[in-house]
Length: 122
Image (cartoon, rainbow, N blue to C red; front, top):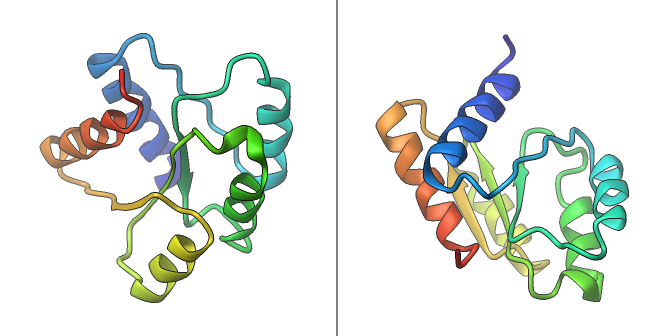
């Protein structure tokens, strides 16, 4: 199993444990994400989580989301395996609310997901 699939499955399971009413959708490109979100006009997500390693170029989706007024109230956060200060600063400049560094330790991963979910204001 590739690491992105593993992260997704872990995320989905921990979200199910912590906030069962929150759905998790995996979209593997910025284009696919925008198509999905454009269909969700009546029910916007409580949060948009972008995996920085899946985006190419990584800031395009973030820019589109922050320029679209429909998503002004939706927190957009990014998570990744590396702590890249340059990327984090660029992402913050175009509207990222927060950056989370992924953890491979199960207990730390659960704490991380809990922090992310707090942005949903459930």
